[in-house]
Image (cartoon, rainbow, N blue to C red; front, side, top):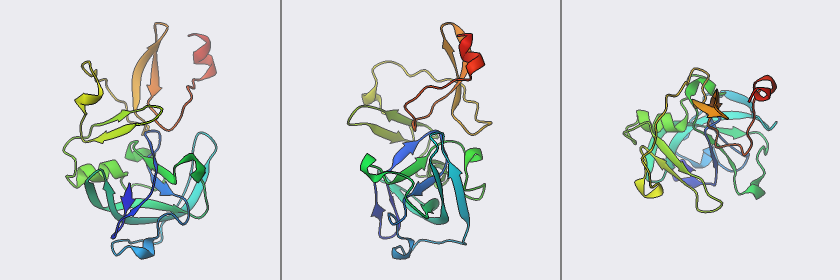
Length: 193
């Protein structure tokens, strides 16, 4: 992913369990971009693993996979919240706007791409692997699957990609979250499964 003019590129984790794009302090330099703007808005957010970040919100041009959108929000953390040795300098949220810590004035980047007409469809596809993972924006890449995709209803009321699922024949609500490697459930619900 890259932000700015000229573009500043950095590795980032794409997370369907959050809505904001933010980077470690010193990764993105807004003063080096001719298209960067801020009105001084700040953010404070936390994640399920206990990670927290605070900082300033900027808007700038986003560049990803040949797609671009102007006035896209990026948060610059006031400190390092993500360990760069993990290969990532930040998080780029792909959940729904109502989950955004940045507030309703700043759409998540994928929604900005859609609003700007950079993608024609509000669909994206992850191909998660030990190495060679990919993200396809604005549709699906049929070269990455061999059967017909099954689409399910999404309940976005809470901002998550919440979908129906079943475990051992019991119907449950589940959240599709590419930002975690764990499976969690409420204890009382889990006892009955």
